[in-house]
Image (tube, rainbow, N blue to C red; front, side, top):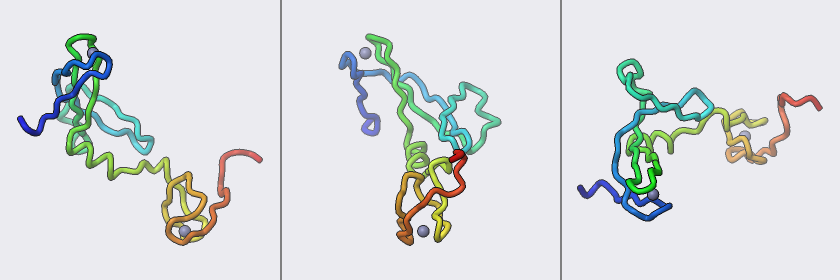
Length: 115
Ligand SMILES: [Zn+2]
Ligand SMILES: [Zn+2]
């Protein structure tokens, strides 16, 4: 029992009850979570699990990524949030103004906006 933490409803402060595991997967590069109820068989290794907790008092539901899902999510940087450095061509966070690898200042490059 030691590995299960007590989750409390932040609305009423009562202990939430573990309801069930719900598998989900991440869609493409967008980082959108898709919950898949049932039909586990065809989804294979991409599928991760979240633990669903339910507040017996107000019905509030919370999802918690399980250990495997947590590791996966921490590792994952959706491609949508990356861009290429103008100088060294490495993947860097899209908000970077400076490349963390070569320190090149990032200028707008290949944007979709018409200027
Ligand atoms: Zn509650
Ligand atoms: Zn660079």
